[in-house]
Each structure stands twice: as structure tokens, then as C-alpha cells.
Image (cartoon, rainbow, N blue to C red; front, side, top):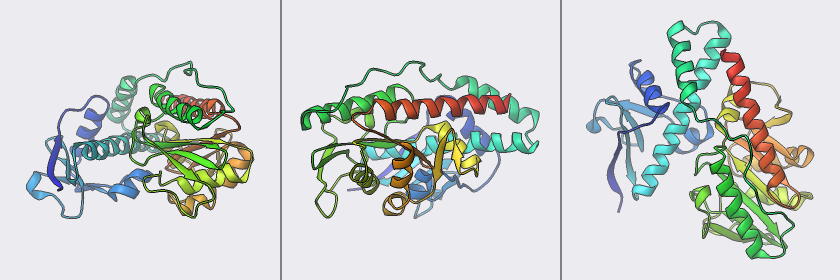
Amino acid sequence: MLSDIFMFEEHDEPIRSILAYYLSRGGERLTPRDSETRSFLTDIPIIGSVGDAVADRTVHLVRTGAILVRGVADAAQAIVHRDIVRFSLFVLFFGEMLAKQRAGTLPFAGKDLAHRLLAAVPELPAAPPPMLNGPFADEPAAQRAVVEAGNALVAAGLVDSVFGNLSCRIGDTLLISRTGVPLDRLDGGVVACRLDGPVAPRGASSEYPSHRRIVTGNRYRAVLHGHPRWTVIWSLASEDPRLFGLPVVEGAPGEELARVLPDAVAAHGAAIVRGHGLFAAGIDDFRAPFETMDRVEHCAFADYLTEMS
């Protein structure tokens, strides 16, 4: 049975001030361009009260400052939708500030707000956590490596817990994270997929087609995909075909993306997807793709600070 209403009213910085910024402008909806919003929300209506909720929208912003989630199965799904909104607001706000800064239209108050909220963003750790060395001898070892890599991505601040997926090939089996499972809780959240099977098993990540083609078409056996915030912001702010030394591709998650992404990853070891983060691959384990994602996100944040200075 679907639950009616989940209301999230407490927000840490910078989300609290970002919400206040958009709610003060008096609009009726927000339309972020990141892939999570496009795929799951379409847009985010702004309403005065619960009674004003739009029938075909799951998530709303309430003018009191709350995030309303309705029509989901349970509190866990409500939290996932809340986190999608928080991510989308973060990307939308800092992308908007960057665009105005570049155009010379960012007022002093806006720049002051952006600087204040940048100071509230947690610093990315300088040193990556240790991870298991490959190649892995068997499926249990590969499973442990997937769980460890998911924990490392979240601990390093490279992804919010539900925004990404991981896979590791062991023989003719692809171990891939389950859809909707937080990356720092993958113990029991990994699906074993036979690579010679026609379709992915139920519950496998929606990005299974890309993961499968990456590990079957070249030497790579481990794949990380995440939505690092600053990398996503830059991918939407720039039309360049390359960012931070990597190719930028475009495509909707699933089969469309799987037609363009694997060749880019095969040639460069990693690729940025516009509005959808980064895919990086490793030959034996997750260490090299983690280092790639970590490097790119640090560069993206450093470049953002430089442009906004």
C-alpha cells in the first residue's frame, strides 16, 4: 500500500539556504537538468500546502521550506526521493551561480551567498581509502571488493549514497549493485548476472547495459559509476567535448547511453556523461577508476572555486 505523505522539514547547509533562495523567488516549479531529475521527477512543483500537490508529481517543495514526498511505498523510498531533490537543488544552484558569474550578471548579494554556501560544503578528503587489490580469485572476493569500493565512494564524498552503481566481472558473471541500494550498504545488495544471458536479472542496476558492454568489449573488469556533484555541474555548464582530460558523451540512462559510452571508456579508461556523472573502469580492481573519479572531482571543485573567486 502506498503511503500518502512524507514531509522533510529539517535541512543542513547548504541545502537550507538553497531552498530559501528558490522559494523566495516566487516561481511555480523548478526544472533542473541533471539526469536524476529528468528520469525520476521531470520537474519539482512549488506549492503553498499539501492540498496543492500536483496529481502526477511525487516530490514538491512547500513554501514553508519543507520537501514533500507522496505516493511512494515506504519511508526508505521517500528518503531516496528527498535525496534526489537535495542533489538536484545543489547542482541547480551552483550551476546557476556559475552561469551568472560568467555572464557578468551575478549581483553582489548572489556572489556573497554563493561564497557563504561554498564555505559550508564539506571538503573532499585528500587521501583515498585503501581498497582490495585484484585480480580477484573468486566470486566472494569480487563481492567484497564491490562492497568496499561502494563504501569508499561515499566515505570520500564522491557520491551521495544512492547516486551510482558498481560492477565487477569474474569469469562469465558480472556482479553489479542492485538498483536503489545505497552504495555504502552493498553487503547483500549485489546481483550476479550471467554475461551470456539475454537480459539482466531483476533488481540489477538500470545501467547494466553499459557495464556489460564495457567489461565484455575490452580488458576492463571493474566499473565505477557515480554522480560527483562538481563534475555534474561542470558537465552541464560546458559544451566542450572534453572535460578534465576525459571525453564527454550524452545519452539517456539505459540502452541509449550504452550505445555511446563503452567505446569512450574503452579508449580513455573513463568518460563523463553530461548531467549524469562519470564512468571509470579498471583492469583488475577498483583502485584506478576510484583514483580517476577522485581526481576529476577535485579538479572540478578547484576550477569552480577559481571561477567564483
